[in-house]
Image 1: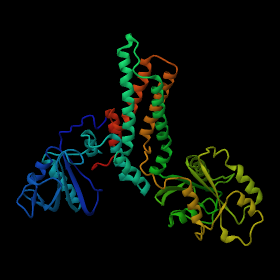
Image 2: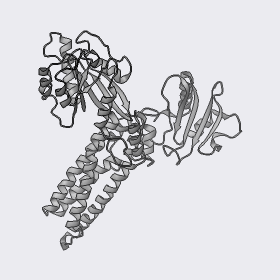
Image 3: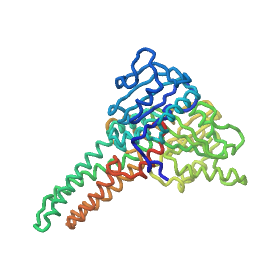
Length: 469
């Protein structure tokens, strides 16, 4: 059952807005028509005789939170009066000490006085319903909270401020104008009047299609910024894959052993470089034959990670590799790396074990091999430099970038409708059929910002938020 089906905006809701557990402080948030009156029952200022009802908006007050029988804590109460608040309703935030008992006791008192526990994301949902945010901005709030790098933070902040929404609304406004002209033609269909010049109509639609194509193309970049770039470290057993992972992370994340096949499953961790998050995946060693069932499963999972990765680091032992093995490298993974978007790097490891320069070093140079010693952490920076070149995200500026899969799906649906409408204009099909395609495009664009929505969509979006947001 959708928890938002029984949603009631007249309820006063409360929740812990800071992470649960013991900390220096915690914040309990209260929002709704009774937020001020309920909090006034339990808060007494230490410095004034004013009650909460008399406090001005956007002010903070030091005092006690207590019942008739119990002083629960010294707190700071902050008041935000409607409509100038995050949700658009009255909001009270109670900053208390981080004791789990204090947090729970304050919530119990507020609920006994008439508030109810908020559902996941209900504060932000109220902000959406009260038109403080559109739907894409609300989703950007969740992205901002979960951002793990500067670039992800910048993108989420840009979208939360409405940069992406503005672009969508501009295109939707243009399509609404087109739809209005076509509807007018349908009203006067018996008089054979053409209000929308077909040449200009096609030109305008092609312009919108070009903009939508740019947005759709930006999803690969937006997805990388949001989730990080998956980097698979692959190679034969005992070539130093786990040592390289530890060198990247600067900690002993993976077990390192001289025994081949030590890594039986994939190990993942993230590393942020210049604001870009990379998800490094240390995989099981690849070998042609093994009788170990667990190792066989690990190798199978390695091939799955190869398909998922955007960047593949193929690691080999420079001190023992032969010319024949170099030739094998060129064809060994052709069946597994069939995506031209993937970046493939050859990494020659264990330079610290080289007693002399191998005769086949020229062939390795031709393959743009990077030579390192993972054990000594030598030339790791060369890999990092190459990794950064795989994605151009140094400055996203004010450009609209799609980072949400739901938005990407709606944009593709819009493109299908617009392409059909454009072809209809070119083929001179009846006006009502062109209008139908444009109305469908308007519907899909409206899904992005929330002009068109359903309870299921809202439940799916806001159900992923934390309770106190």
